[in-house]
Amino acid sequence: MARVTLTQHLIEQQRAGRITADLRLLIEVVARACKAIGVNVSKGALAGVLGEAGTDNVQGEAQKKLDVIANEILLQANEWGGHLAAMASEEVEEVHQIPFDYPKGGYLLLFDPLDGSSNIDVNISVGTIFSVLSNPVDGPGEPGEIAFLQPGTEQVAAGYALYGPSTMFVLTVGHGVHGFTLDREMGSFVYTHPFMTIPVSTQEFAINMSNMRHWEAPVQRYVGELLEGVAGPRSKDFNMRWVASMVSDVHRILTRGGVFMYPMDAKCRDKGGKLRLMYEANPMAMIVEQAGGAATTGRERILEVAPQRLHQRVPVVLGSSEEVERVTRYHLDPQ
Ligand code: AHG
Ligand code: MN
Ligand code: MN
Ligand code: MN
Image (cartoon, rainbow, N blue to C red; front, top):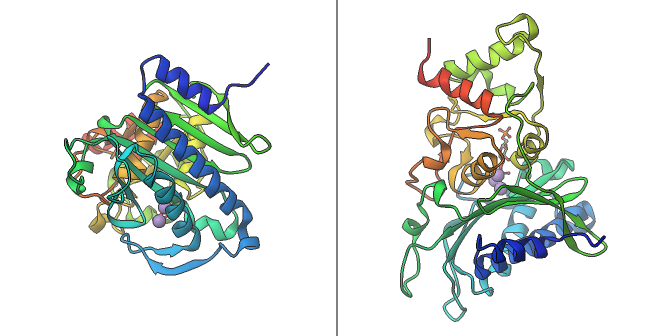
């Protein structure tokens, strides 16, 4: 039986009136760019793509060579397509305009070209995260930062590529979450995970425990209860996983449930949090909600945060709704 591919899935979404032809073509271009990023990632030391680039990004992070390579691949792949009004990237301070002599379209593309890049030199899975908005600016003018500052509820598509033991592409256009696995012989993404769903409850949590002394009281209380296990107030034992690649931690939660937290802490408070709203928290929040999970900053729904700056950071609590609701409740009505 012929296997359904991403291309066929997208054509069916277009026929069902859920996406436009332009959005379908944009997603295809992004998926193809992710395949090219995956080829570079999988070469590792063989292609001299590991290690530092010797430059810093707007986040104040030392860029890895693959951060820069992945960023270039996505910018170049998407400039000529004619579907975009502009782009924004973790690795680029300003809005990236489409070259003046290229065709333009009605969408804005935002991305984290290489997520989890601190893992690349130790050969642990990394990914790419992307988000698509409609350009609110009518007419030929170049959209500035303001055009991007839309709440996550305005996203028309969100997804990620995961460069793991297998390369996967996970996508939502607002009608469930669908997973595709790269068939390297054919070079196509095969539809392997229809309607990915996050279980409501879980016994697995993900947080960087080394930050414990910096957490606010509600997170101290919540994690403290988990660690007491079956003898504690939760009456069950919990397991812990922390990959330090958000894409890997979120994919695990989409596959078997769990709760992921990168909360506000004393270390990242002055920056507003660790993870970036526009191209990490928002796309992952759309995916998680579309899979039946929940995603808050600890105090409010991530998708309803009104963005103030392109590279703004937010605290993140996402995953199995039962746990996200509990953590959020501890923030809102601390005893
Ligand atoms: P990026 O590599 O795109 O900068 O993102 C890294 C993020 C995210 O992927 C991960 O969940 C988090 O940083 C890990 O932070 P710690 O290294 O502090 O655990
Ligand atoms: Mn980074
Ligand atoms: Mn990231
Ligand atoms: Mn990144």
